[in-house]
Length: 384
Image 1: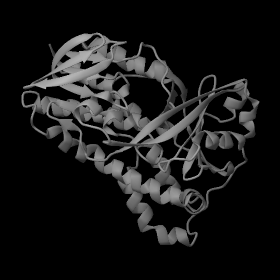
Image 2 (image 1 turned 180 degrees about the horizontal axis):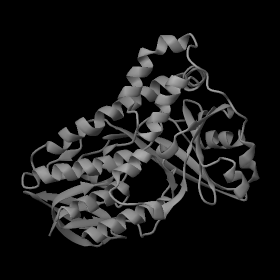
Image 3 (image 1 turned 45 degrees about the horizontal axis):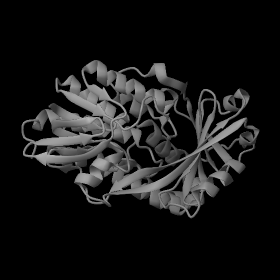
């Protein structure tokens, strides 16, 4: 018998297990995968994400970032330095492993290679059936990703909206990696209705494309994006991966009695950059706070109310920002991103100094100014 059973040991599930174990709760953390395991993800961790964690992650940092390159189809590139707010690049296998280790140190029991099969509520407890046995818990936390089996089993289907993303790990000479100068690259014309990214790691470049509008052939979009960059042609090896990014919860369903959803399982990724780790960790923090308030009252709906205040509103504005910007992405880059004031807003989304709601209203309020090409123009640099 456990107080809390967490299904899914990604960042949101692992951090939720850590925070709840710290409260003195008996926590089970299980995942279908054997660990360490590779996880398809850009691996760019914003500074606001680092700030959320209660422990140091320097042991798993591949590169400390210093800023961003902002470009449109590898033309008229703008450099944006963010200093200490830039964030870091990690490999998910090591990053997730660190969080799981911290959860175990806090007292959580971790069971890898333990797949969720079904769950049944009995009064104020949940009976959880897995490939590793049957367990009982007062609460069940679904943190098992965008195609969550916990969600489909207990909440139903068609709850979460998602968009595809694909990436390539491109192994290039170190001189090419160094040419990115520890900055991430965002190409706002990298694919139709979306963007492309290049994140430098220790021994490779993580390159990918994403759009909330989807794509008729996103693999072809990625190949075209790679073809825009001469620096990517000098690769030694290339590995392709695909995944889905959850960009919304259609029904605002995050709690069904004593079963809660967090992270990707709840639909918590923002729509503009497709960032999910920050909001996944934030949902873990909210869940831990709600658990402190309602542990003995599992039928109360404190958790979804806290989510609406802390996460959901900002995520909705990220969708508005993405739809407005990427519907007119060339205009958005040349009339907005290259203008100093709006440039700061979009950079602030990366660093955490600006929220999506603030970015939306400030950009909208000054739109007539940018329509007339007002404001200081950022200087452009050479192509990659």
